[in-house]
Length: 215
Image (cartoon, rainbow, N blue to C red; front, side, top):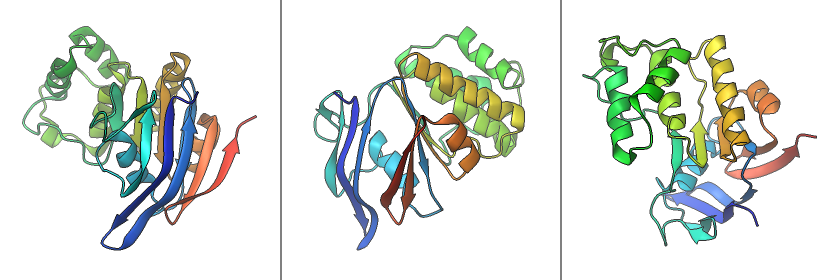
């Protein structure tokens, strides 16, 4: 049985078709890529699968439970989306600590470890408002992975990252898959998708146009 299923999902906004009858069957322990140009529907599909945007028609099923019906948000999820909500007047470390208090699955020591891996100092008192785009992206990656979620939905996760940070991100994805997470990455970075993902879905105009399985 597939662990995460997208079944005939469509999304229409103001008579514009954003997603058109998307079907995916995703298994634990694999990394999946969504690749396509801007406006192809990648971001909307990530949002629909996470619980942030209800489809106009179709279903998202996780462990045979229906999203938006039996539960409102994908359980035990790690999520990267554009403009993630952070407290501008707090430090990066304090932001991550506050997020970790919600589900109580992550210690301060774990947060410190992740920050140091990405070249961020837990002791830095600089507020997030003064962070660069790359530093904010690192925080987004850390908050997505730090609680070891079962499903990772990652929209353009390597934006504004330096090469060493991209390599660390790749390592996190591989480790998560080895621990049986489902990892889904939406990106316009073709090289990243082709090198990292076990299965790639090519999207255009809200549809899956091709599926490529890495041999």
